[in-house]
Amino acid sequence: MQQSNKFFRNIFLSGIIVFIFAAAWYVTRSDPLEVDVAIVTYGNVEATIVNTRAGTVKACQRANLAPQIGGQIAEIFVEEGDIVEQGQVLLELWNTDLLAQRELAERQLSMSEQRYQEACILAQNARRESQRTQQLVDQGFISSQRAEDADAKARAQQASCDAAFSDIKRAKAQIRVTQAGLERTALKAPFSGIIAQITGEVGEYATPSPPGIPMPPVIDLIDTSCLYVQAPMDEVDAPKIRVGQSARITLDAMSEETFQGQVTRIAPYVTEIEKQARTVDIEVHFTDPSNSHLLAGYSADVEIILDNRENVLRIPTQALRQNNRVWSLDANNTLIEKELKTGVTNWSFTEVISGLSNGDRVLTSFDLEEIEPGITVQPKQPDTSAL
Image 1 (cartoon, rainbow, N blue to C red):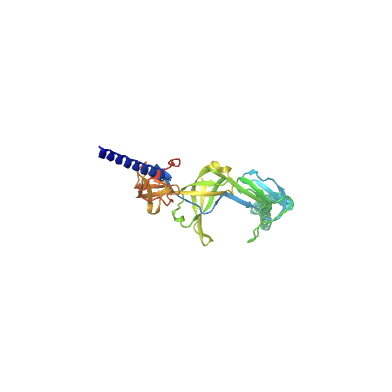
Image 2 (cartoon, rainbow, N blue to C red):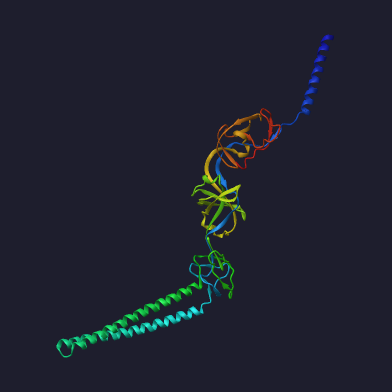
């Protein structure tokens, strides 16, 4: 009986010791490492490239206008911000002398036309007189010398008529010359658009730019009905770009709005601004014609879509490690290292061809030193907002 009591007492003491050690381990044990995870799911993945430096919104047509000849500005018919039509006169230089020359040429034309009418009437009369004289010669009433004299007079009068007609053509040519000079004093809009800036004033002298010497324009005209973005792309990405590819355009002035565009031109040369930064300029036109409210000169970024995969298995790109490896969690939240076969990728998502399944969980933050295969972790609430 005494041995039996001793046996049960030893078991009881052993149980107490085990309980104490278990309680001590439970109290002193470290909590599982908390990690950020993402759920593997289906979605779209695009392969894109972006410009290296900010691009610029430009108008398809923009002209810095100045008169063809130098002169004093007599009148400006527009103001900044006015919408003008093609061919509309924008300003006019002093041209009183040319107007007087045109009036003189018009009067000379009138006089030439009157002289032509007079000379031709005389020529017709002389021709009829020559015919009657020849009839009298044939009948033997007068000598042949009279007929020759009448014929010479008729031909001389006809020459005067022809000369008067030449004077008419010369007078008309003189009018065209003076009219051309007048047109050179009027600055007209080469296309429809909006007046962006006027630098000249009435009374100032406007001078066209001589060869090799740039002069400030008098009027800056912009056609805002057609806009595009010129942006520099890294020379490494240039071979991937093709005319006709779709693109997304974002503006610093409208950061919350995205515009659709299309690549329309790729420069045939590399721009060397710095030896370490060689770029190729591209042009991306806005595909929505309602974007005419945008302003030329806005800074813009272009994202060209090289490839698009719809409804494919994807993971956040930040979950990828070197050699396409990821940390995956099993049902017990134990870390497993897996190697993936990937497809199209961008800064946000990467297409998974093999190695993971829909609904799997992967780590998106693996810069902690404690992470290693086989440890148990505590996942935070998975971020599915971007998926």
